[in-house]
Each structure stands twice: as structure tokens, then as C-alpha cells.
Image (cartoon, rainbow, N blue to C red; front, side, top):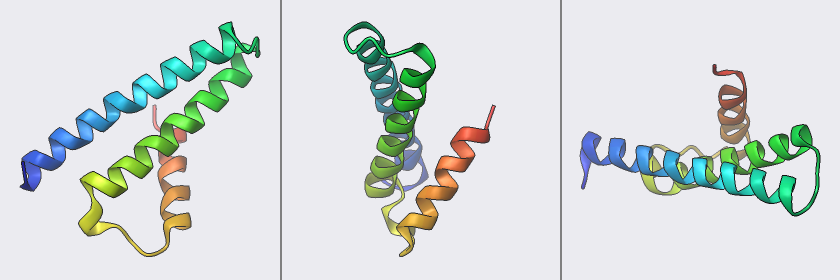
Length: 84
């Protein structure tokens, strides 16, 4: 799939991957590593955001990816953190 429809599909699929990363890491950290809920949530969220940023940059929006990955990641992380 290409074009806007393909981007939308990839974006949605990668969002699903992000959810799976978040949920599985959170569950593992709380149940197996015995970390507190808040610490576990912070780590699982950070890993999920990092995974979705990388996958979207690589597969969904590769044509539009900028050269300054650090700034791009920082902005992406800030939006994900501040969005309701």
C-alpha cells in the first residue's frame, strides 16, 4: 500500500505495536521485576514511545524524516507525553 492510505494503515498498525510494547513491558515489570506501578509505567511508556517513533520514522514517514533525529525524537516524546 502506498500513499496516504498506506501511511494511515502503517501508522495504525505501529500504534498497535506501541500498545503491545507498553502493556507487555508494564505487566512484566510489575509482576516479574516487582517494580512499583509508577516506575513501571514510566519505563513502559518511554519504551513504547521510542518504539513507535522509530517504527513510524522508518516505515511510515521515511520520506519526510529529518536529519536531526534527536530533535525529532524530543518533539515526538513531548507531544506523546503532553497529549491527553
